[in-house]
Image (tube, rainbow, N blue to C red; front, side, top):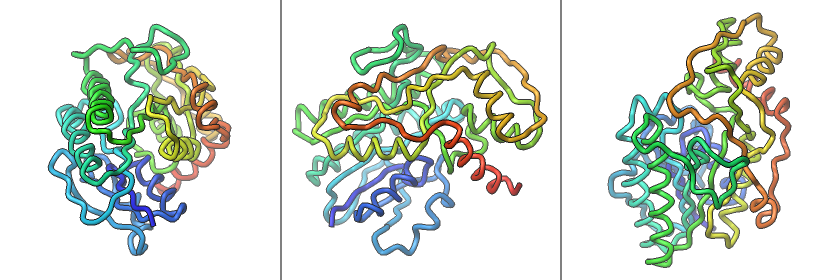
Length: 312
């Protein structure tokens, strides 16, 4: 039986990955320190003989007894609110945490997958964004702590691949949504859903013309699994190229919830990307992957989770 370590395993994406790998017959070691992860996300897995939870800060030395075949490094704050609250921890988990996780992969002979992000493209000057684009990032802006941590993590991953021969995979994740997102996450879909469900004004930044391409979590997890099991060592975008403006998304969520909320506009945050759309030709060609869940379907599933979480 293959054994996988998932750092950040109690987070939004990490907890779904724990389920995926358990479902595929793996033994799963979930590691988290709960800076942004939540015990509730993995509570239903406790007691499964194939599941082990380890509370640990991955910026410190990582010890896992026994065989480890795969490591997925998903430990990181991942929303603009988090960057402002824990900027140094964000930098540390992308640098020191990646170094420690790669060191373990080297010691165990494990295949390593780093969760990178579309934020490595910054506020892009090309559209849609393909993997060959080097990005337009402000290293000293408020988002730089996340953007540069992930760019460094990619560089460190490739260094271990080239110098130590570690089997590595790099996934660049575009905006993803679904159950287990934090209500106060700060990203668009949780913010719009929670505000609409409470009947509060729905906050749109700028004039709402900035775009995102949102992917349902089940599709993303499928793409991650396919990449891990592939032979591709160069970065691969995984996301849904169905682009939508933030104003359109806000209106769609208000309609979906049946809310009486109105929309209010606030200034655009510093370095907020104006456009974001993945070119997924590489994922389609190499992995045979493309998103399958339509936005309305995914939002409806996410809405049910939020209603339950908010006691509605």
